[in-house]
Length: 115
Image (tube, rainbow, N blue to C red; front, top):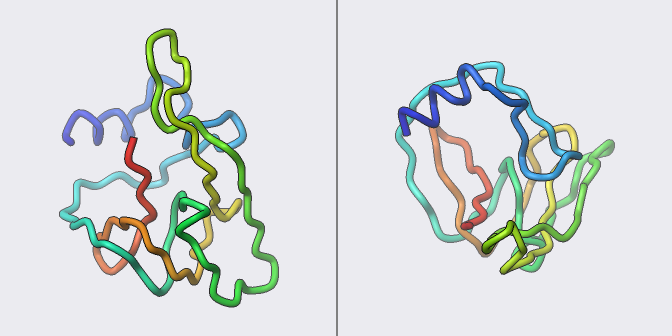
């Protein structure tokens, strides 16, 4: 975790949440304790498995990006498993009912995609 923290704090390459469409930046970096919870209802951030997600009255201006993504790669970077994932384009929290795992950190739920 400390190596990951250092990599986010001072990246050598541009940060990305996966595809070129989802380039990222870090405004702050910190090592925090968290816990994995099964299922979530309330506001959350991150990538969500579409089949496990139900949006709860998205606010006006919500922009959801949804696409198929390789979540497991084999030799030669060939996809071994592909899943349909969604996220809010601006990074704003979404009110969700989610049947998957979430990471609970300092009162914030973050969608988790196991790879």
